[in-house]
Length: 304
Length: 296
Image (cartoon, rainbow over all chains, first blue to last red; front, side):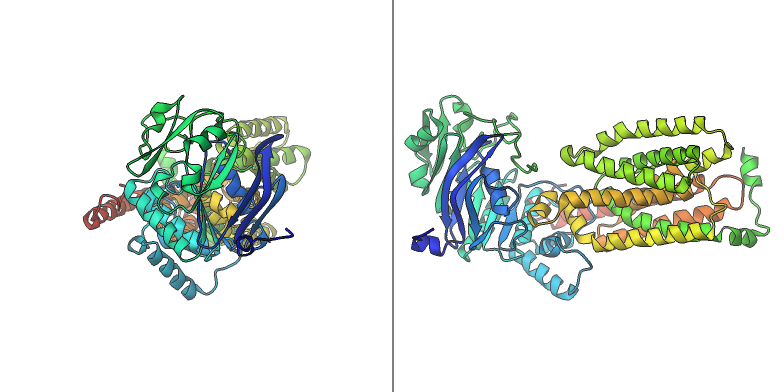
């Protein structure tokens, strides 16, 4: 870039005219984004809009079709220690022969071959991380017997192990109860306050709405970046979806309603009882339109 | 039947006999140690059925070699590694190792039976491949088996952390730069080699007793990663060597001894583990201040 703005100069994550697609169909394109240290970005949008694909690009697991993605001034690449990643909650089987501390240790050096050196230093570091995420109480418990929320704290510890510049979170609150949602959110916010830029992919903005600096809304009809107030508006979302959408503020929570699926969207923060799509967009953000087209193309943890 | 079993025990000249099979004891011991080690990953990656599938296809390879007049051991090894690699590659995409194995296994076994029925030689050779043999393991064979087992164990030690990472949390491991797919194939090839070697001693049908049961038992009683591996290795060693030491007293083949010992160990671990888990659960309930600290 010839003329870089001051914001871009100290940007820890930058996307320039980035675009990606599958099978000749564009998922998103022309994406320009700069994150400064400590900034908290929420990535919203319906299923198949490419939220997880965006994370894959930043993790170096998915190549861009156009444009560039840089993290801390270098092209995004696989296994970078500048990037921390909290994947979606997934239970580990009860018989996994690992204690909580072993899981955190994997986050520190699990990618290294050979025999573990400096055991004492490792142990100290693991203890620090466990302390940091409030998991010291169950440090020696088998990971398979911990609750989903407890396991998710360990994933946070893993992600923070390399003291990343950018923290990527893929639905980290998914399937957690309120108590653990708050705990994990607090952890991530503290990390942002200490200078780590956070990219937080979620279906539901409400649990984090007070911490969000900016919103990136990905939709089939395009994307929008801005403050929560600027993006989460009826006109903006209606334009993105090409269909009438209402955004209503109700007791400090944002309620997104489409005419098609009003029933599902009038109660964000609540989980509907009936199972919808495997990754259902029922709460908070996405009206269920133009959906599912890209579902089978490597979204959500499936390898592309 | 009972008379045959009890009558088959003779302690007279036991040590002379033991000397005769000392090669087998060494080979089985080393195989046991290796089997216990790789077994932990077999359990973690839920590939117990794959072990069985590889074993049966390795039997087909051995039968083909027998028919073609080639080295049977080499035939079974080639069959096992090829089967393992094939299963590894085929299951990369849809992750359903069980289904791929279920498809390949009967075909392999069918081929094996076909080759054996075409074979005109001594029929005694047929059963050795399926149920194992301990007599006539010569020095060269022992050396090969020991070298192979040491090599496999060494590779396992080197790839231990990434393989563990990729097995318990593939998504995160991939993001951290671990070559999850390459490790997956690599592990399958190791497994193929391990099975091919174990088949020599305890036979295609009972390979699970050395590679899977000991690890399954150890995971019942411990979650400490190091003690899980050490226990599993110990169980496997006891089963293999103990099985041979009992088997040489009589005329019954070695496999029932090995399988019975490993099964008994598993039963004991099951009971011990259950008690331990219950205690842990009640501890957790006592110490729980909020309903969120324990999911059980």
